[in-house]
Length: 116
Image (cartoon, rainbow, N blue to C red; front, side, top):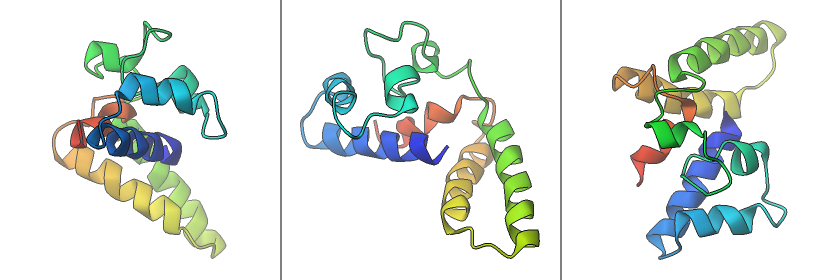
């Protein structure tokens, strides 16, 4: 889920600087920034992903509230293990807000709507 967040933020930053989001994802997939999110599960519509959740207003896919449930379980493991969870806590803040805002049934890519 951290990869989805960073991909959404990178797409948003590029869009705010005049780069078409689909073009940015296409370029991203041709360089070291490529990831499963950018190449298989993009939060913005691109021609190579006709079934991506973004094409269905994020009503399909991995629900944010379920992601948050999984993140809470991971936090319990981190806490009981005495391992720092800085990144996990940051990711949880994003999905806690999404759920609080009533978008818990939306796919995890709905975070892009914070920006675009």
